[in-house]
Image (cartoon, rainbow, N blue to C red; front, top):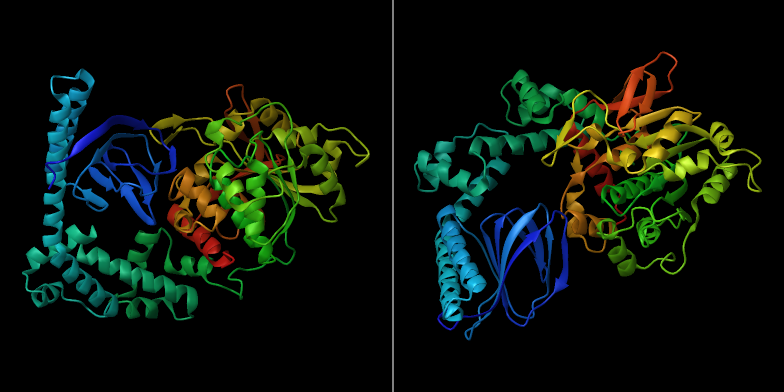
Length: 567
């Protein structure tokens, strides 16, 4: 059926991490093969994920997009067939992937050198690739029975997790020896039967710890653990915290699922939304806290020149039912290139905003006005560069307030919370690179040095090291009607590091058993952008430390956003 295949174009392409290809369609079939890297695509309404060896065929006139999760190398071929076929996704095994890759490299050589009759040769090579895909699909269909019996085994474990389970008996009931069935199960699920059963038991245990007053020992027994010590040790190894500690942190204490502060904080947020998507997550978190009556939002400013930044901020606020007037940086061009517009323009135009046609108020006058009007002391939160706050600090008395910026901050601000810096002697390994300076500090070094040196109130740092292993909000990408999900989908199409969310979380809920604070000290910023901390009894600066572990903190944040979504 593939002998009439005709190749129309052949492309070798290198995607950069986070690169997004807008929805489009072709006149011909499109074949995509990932040599290495990872990514995802929506073909119509179906999500397709890519990894090395993934082969995908997209039908003509089928709208699809693509986003790269990592740097990736890809072959893309447009071809036609007389006999139609449907969309196809095949995860090739190692030998098949190597075969297809070899055929593609032959095609690349034929195209590049335009050898005699190269068009006929490439058509034949493409037909051979299509045959290999069809063979792989047939093999997978034959394995469909494995999927069904494994599904039944999983259901049995979910229904009987509180009892001792004999895996050999499960295998026999499916007509297999235990040794054969355990290999089938692990191949389908990606984990052993024992690992899967433990996950089921831990899931139920967490539910009981959150929603019941049963003793820890009783919960362990009801979840299939024969001894309390076995449950406690296994749970602690899995979650990074003990069952008792988990209950303290996660158990709802009122209808909002949080312990409310007697006096809620008044928060002013400054964001560089656009270059990364955790700003969008932080905005969602702050809006949820406002809606839960945990915090008041005094104001929000955007601190880059990105054209659609303020509009995107406005969209997220309005999604959560909060129409908040904004302030906006209006200085010389700053962080406004295409690398900083991964999602802001798309979200602003998709949902609409009052700031699409008209800029927001100039940031410094807006901040001075908002602080002057506030009846309570405010927490200034920075989840971007310190250019706006530095300009506020150096501002002079004016018609808005007779106080200088420094005096206004001293009178109206109780604490400044900065997502910035990198503390500790050892550099951080992140995405294959070594870091000893942090992005928000480095990208406007003069502003960071000036503000941190001259700020008249205490500063708490939420640094790079605190958030780079806490990955959250990947679940939002499934909802195209949620602007936060749109931001995450177009930036990384999954979980993202949670620097900015952690900063907002601390600003509203404080240490709250989640964080510890370093000893007081003084932070200086050197000419390279390194943040140097020196303990000092009279120092007014400190940095946060995670007390509960990265996975537990990620789960904590995800639960707040899931429960707080307006739907």
